Image 1: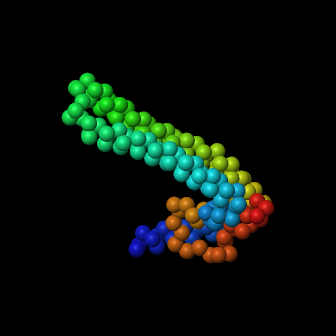
Image 2: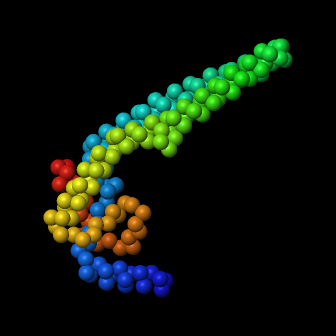
Image 3: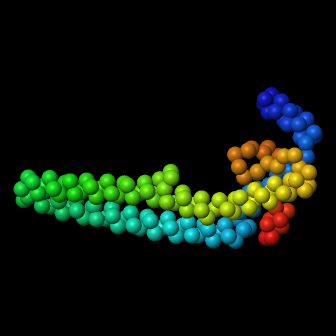
Length: 166
């Protein structure tokens, strides 16, 4: 508790010397129609790519079930060939999953392509607003920053939306 009091008193003295406001970027994004459209487009890509992966998984399952049913009747060489084919198909599924949904995959790239320009617009609007209104610091309420208390008068999200024309 003492740490919180010390932090609050330090923050209080810091804030008194600064012109501070905050915005809620999540609220701003939710009120921009282009963001909703981009989210819908991303969801559609995600669903389409997941279906593509599911079809491949079903093919692997079918190959495996067929192999299990016939394995005792197959000569060793055909067994190995079928096993290798199943393993290759499983690798193909893993590779496609990584390509579509991996850290630098297609979904991430689509997010960057569709969402980043909107985020850049918001950042520019916030920067211009801060310059015009002479704010020293603007916090983002929806980020990892923890706000114990926030005075609604300091919330400048609506002004940012207005600056963006929404």
